[in-house]
Image 1 (cartoon, rainbow, N blue to C red):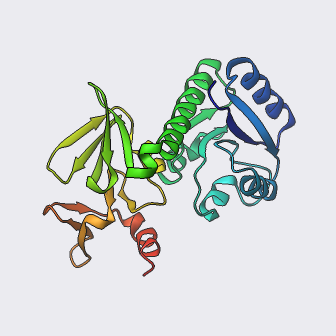
Image 2 (image 1 turned 90 degrees about the horizontal axis):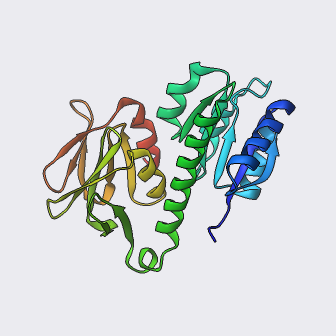
Length: 245
């Protein structure tokens, strides 16, 4: 039997909380609600105590600080995040800056809810498979499901990952490319905390394959294979901190 997906609900409205719990009970038996937070302090406390696999997150909790502000303050954040909000104005920011797996607008449409929740469940299970498999631990491999088969790639053989619509292209040190039918954000979560950094909405690089970073004329990573990749302006400060500069 598959392990349940530990889920934290962050919602200050009692009616919306109850609706979420009913929808999850009816349509998502894999979900186990391990806590409910109604304030940002509750959110932070439960996040660290419970370490959920999945967050169902309202943006506004009736406080000056919204939950996206809280996300920006939490380090080593590994939970899958689904925003459930009546405010659509934060959608682009949430998806681009906070690695959000889905954005559901209120009132909730059941079909959208089921689809986005199921996608998040799949992402959690893939992440756990890569983290917990004996091969992944002993040989530092990552499993890639291509159009033909499942391949195990050594992490150290990855030069960089490139977004191609809903697909991700793995560029390897031997010059080969592997195309996988998952978006780049999924692999950002899987590879987080290792030697990989997302320098651009289109690229994640293996920092061990970076020869230098050119800051004279724009910002670029120069890789060991001679390839140069642009670094997005909004990623400059995060990269500097990541490199302890």
